[in-house]
Figure (cartoon, rainbow, N blue to C red):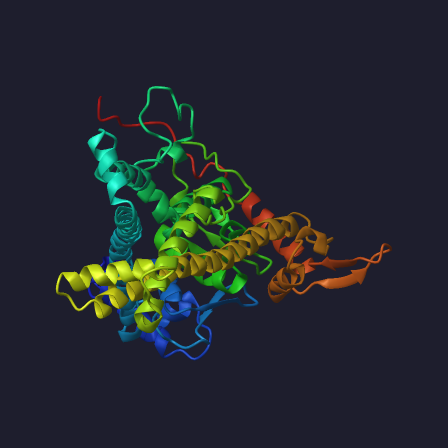
Length: 486
């Protein structure tokens, strides 16, 4: 009667969500390691369904995998049975992550607009104030000569002002004061970098040019899937570490996520080595061309601009800071102002506003002092903070790249490992490997320390033996037996 098919109507027809809840409930009550067969006894779920769902539960609840003497995989949860994806904590974390990303985009857009308004606006404003003060001073001291020049048809102050304004606007909004539009061919053959509008170069100085490794997660997943397909659908944890650049503890969690996403399943070899088998990735009509060596991340760059251009932006900002500090100083010390000398520019602005019936001290102090000073400081602080963060990011990228390369070298020859394989931070990287496979340590005839990872060597041999025992043609889809085009 058990074969009649009537007994399983309440079990095998459970939805994926119900079956998963049943599985999780059984795991939650478990205090020791549990096998797939144990789970079946506790839940009456079909073995195939358990094998499909157990990688998902192991990933979500941060399981620990062990191998029994009989070669069975044991699942345990010594770090607490708490979901990584569900519940108030993870939901709150996702909310804050999305909110932070949205705020970052919003404030970056606002700050970019503010930068152009402030940097260009104050540069032009201080330029106009200075020019007007000089013109006024010249007119006051030699009004007769100025009238003679204007009557003779020479260029007046208005013409000079318009030409200088044109130069300023071209400097900021086009390319440079040298690119005047003449047909002489200036600028031909320049790199594409130099063709960017100047405002984009300003943003490059302040904000940088984005993540050089954008889309890395997808690229890495594609390469890892290709590697698994090339290796007959089987990968070990050390190989996953080499491909991902993660440490062993994080890699053990991440590989379970790969099992969930790509139909993988941990298995134990005859020697008790845990391997991860992805039969679902094998059917395919194309030979995989992915390379065995893992790809390396590129470093972040401070800016796509040349150093000289960034120095020019800093210098122009220093001009704004200097003018802002000048007006702020005399606004706070009005007793030091006089008609001539260094304080003349402040006196000119103050007198001009007073002549319009405006109380000038507060507007000058705030509009020409506090605001440009604060902006100029921010204009330097943001790139300075970003430079420090880039240095930290690049150090992490460099360490991850060396972990990939060093671990790959150890995996190739695990019995004769020296610190020369790693270079910088060799001790830390060797300790990471040692947390997974304890080495024997000897001093050779040259006085160098040699590490012998015998357990890693045995795991590598067991993995190769396991792969040799797998049908080499199981990934071949075979001949075409149906064609939709007839």
